[in-house]
Amino acid sequence: MNKIHAAITAVHGYVPDYVLTNKELESIVDTTDEWITSRTGIKERRILKGEGLGTSDMAVHAVNGLLKKRGISAEEIELIIFCTTTPDMPFPASANILADKIGAKNAWGYDLQAACSGFIFGLSTASQFIESGKHKKVLVVGGDKMSSIINYQDRTTCIIFGDGCGAVLLEPNEEGLGIMDSILRTDGAGKQFLHQKAGGSARPATHETIDNNEHVVYQEGQAVFKFAVTNMADVAAEIMERNNLTSDDVTWLVPHQANKRIIDATANRMGVGSEKVMINIQRYGNTTNGTIPLCLWEWENQLKKGDNLILAAFGGGFTWGSVYLKWAY
Ligand code: UT7
Figure 1 (cartoon, rainbow, N blue to C red):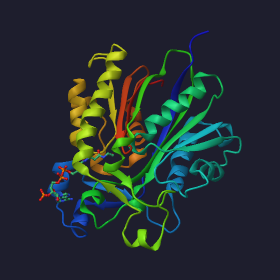
Figure 2 (cartoon, rainbow, N blue to C red; figure 1 turned 90 degrees about the horizontal axis):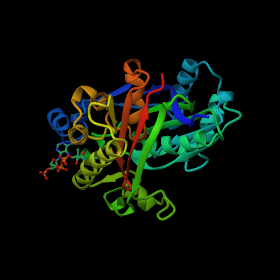
Figure 3 (tube, rainbow, N blue to C red; figure 1 turned 60 degrees about the vertical axis):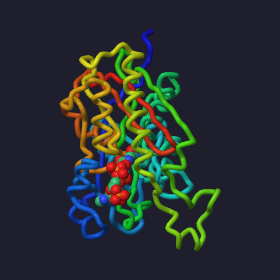
């Protein structure tokens, strides 16, 4: 019997309708379209508006679209891994909430938290359930409502993040296609540079934490940038080397969309030309767990069976990693 790989067999995404432009941000904080564009590559991002709507509500759109495309019912899903940093609630898991909303009655699931690297960690984790033969249909969802943890008075963070969600279906493949390799890394010493100060068990919500605005993203941008630019490029180069891939062999680089300059540095390090790099940061900003599946969704029509894709991400934690996969359809 041939080795079983976990292959993506469907992908879909969702971004909310509201477009927050750099122009509008100019009226909220002391910034300019020119500064944001030149430092990050971002022109606009989407914001989920509406009372009581959370990350799972975006996931419902993404997953329902995916199921329709694949022509299967939610009841056929066996496992949902929901990669998110902004779950609807601290508990239960957004995977449970999503399963209920879409009618995935036979699925179990859990949330996976690895900040911006979450989708890559989730993809690699999910692939184990397929490769072992335990499951045949696993959903990996990556999404965030970053606007729920952003301080719109802090010009260093509010210009970067946006809301969005994507999802992929993993199924067994015996043709040698699917996820071939992954490299995953964490370094908790990086926590000081990018975190949310309050709302966890170490510092639960109090009047003081609210007054101090501690329930939002805290980022030391320059420090994070330095680590991101080195580690994301290194890990992408490492996975190429380990799999004997030259830049000619790589059909697409699918990078986490945190900053266009980090993406360019990663592509340069890999020797991959810009025509092979999926970039939509200008329209969506950094949607954290949503960036990579949203790229796959938008580029789906250009992907061909057998294409070599390198996925790479870097995020809070620090977390970073890379996945090498062969597109299966
Ligand atoms: O996805 C998770 C991982 N996160 C990342 O990968 C993000 C990594 N970091 C970055 O992308 C960049 O560091 C930022 C985009 C966050 C910031 O860009 P930067 O080029 O590193 O700017 P900086 O923090 O060094 O700030 C340079 C100047 C400062 O002014 P002074 O001190 O030189 O007078 C900032 O106060 O730019 C100022 N500044 C702004 N000016 C206009 C910071 N934010 C803004 C702004 N508009 N929005």
